[in-house]
Every structure is written in C-alpha cells, then in structure tokens.
Amino acid sequence: MPPLIKYLVVFILIVIIYNLFKAFYHLSKGTSNPKKVVKSLMIRVGFSIALFLSLLLASYLGIIKPHGLLPIEKPAIEQPL
Image (cartoon, rainbow, N blue to C red):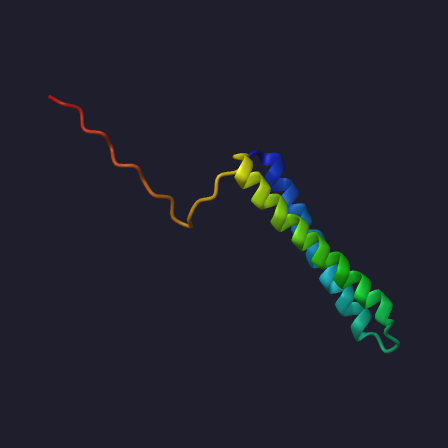
C-alpha cells in the first residue's frame, strides 16, 4: 500500500475519533446543546462511511491489496537436480 494512502487512512481515523470525543464533550456538559452533539456524530458517521467506501473502491481498483493478519508464505519452488 502506498505511504500516502496509509497516512490518509490514519488521518481520517484521527478525525473520526476527534469527532466522537467532541460529541461526548458536548453531551457531558451541564448545558448540552443537542444540535452540536448530532452534528459531531453526523460528521463522524459520514467520515466512517466515506473511509469504508474508499477502502472498498481502492481494493477493487487494485490500489491496495487486502491480506490476513499473518501473511501466507509461498512455498519455495524446488529446482530439479
């Protein structure tokens, strides 16, 4: 996976977490404003869906290649003697 894609995914994940904590902050304030909570959660859900769809599209186009947690080692081809 190209480094730019990795940095972009990490940045979007940070933005998602930031908006989650922002919504929690507005919710936990004594005088909470429901509009701010809903707006922060809406932004978080929007970024989450956009990230999911962009990862699916990048996988479909071959930009990224999905793999398991433990990569499968290809068996060595035996050379005839």
